[in-house]
Length: 134
Image (cartoon, rainbow, N blue to C red; front, side, top):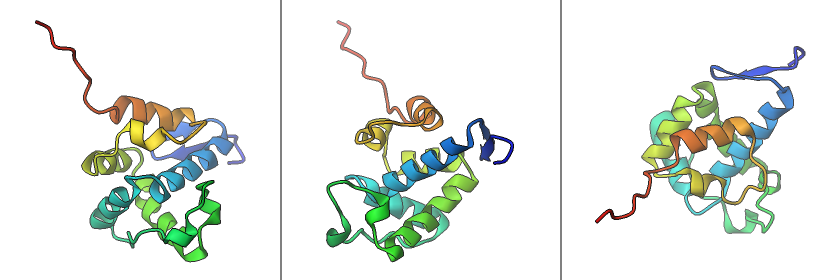
């Protein structure tokens, strides 16, 4: 970090603050959204961890990871760990297995860091739609 960059898997992130933004965005993806439960369950099957649902009283309209209980934040962080350690392959494979594609992953995020956006765009965009050519 003192050098002004860090590594996320085999990807060099030039601005070290971007690393923390990406981690925070990944924590949000695992915590909230219609498909987050399936993603947590897939991570738990592959790497272990507790995929139990976020309690209703912890969900907020702001959907902020910081508003979750300490226990929920710990569980989600523990689920994220293997995805970051084997970045980006583990994240891509887990998202594909749980049928989480870029449109679901990034839809509620007003700003997405470039490294995460590129992976979602290039690897998780789903199948392209082709018009009927008659």
